[in-house]
Image (tube, rainbow, N blue to C red; front, side, top):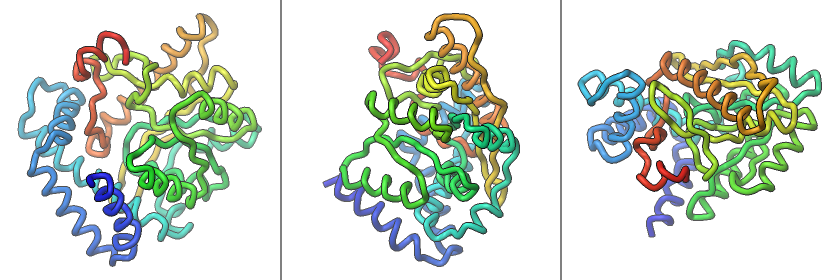
Length: 301
């Protein structure tokens, strides 16, 4: 029953919310964000625990609570825009995106070399994907398997309607298909600040050990594609993004050692971007190893 309710809620989002007057929708979603914050459920508590690490605090205080409220407002804005994004025209998506550093990305792709764009859960990465497609660079990404299956299908349909190629995130076949796209000179976009696999890499992140996926570095090493970190945020009513410098493949070391070095560098860039825009990092899940279940922290799952 819960799965059916979830599916119905998302279906309503892409129908009713999509067609609501924008001002009314924004007021409604801000109110939902504030209510969720006031309820202080498990997700908000984990968010505040994460923000303590970002701010270098040992306990939740008024500063953390105020920041968590801002994060919830930003997070619910993301969902509002996800539901309404199919209504946005090309001019709005391109005209209201404030991007820096994208010239090196476009130059890489125009040369025929593939590029892995690695992002954290910041700002609106769905809108950033639409911006990349409208800029003339359709890309491949992966999607987490959701329950019920109909909900997963809705997300795939939504992303494909924006011009993305979407693969299920698990399995060697997804990795192989992404590698094919990269060797063909196309971009692959991945959100990689939280590990959903059993092969994550432990990295230093805001002074403690966190676990992040190895896939971005592994793809770059295997295919010769460029690895570009990207950070995202909101700028008033507009969207902001920065394409950071390429993370090169180390000249020396075994493959796993190279993956470790590159993933650590990726985490360091994410840390820089999150520290600059902590209110737009939508992380309500566990990232740091100390927060994971004891078995997972010990055996790497």
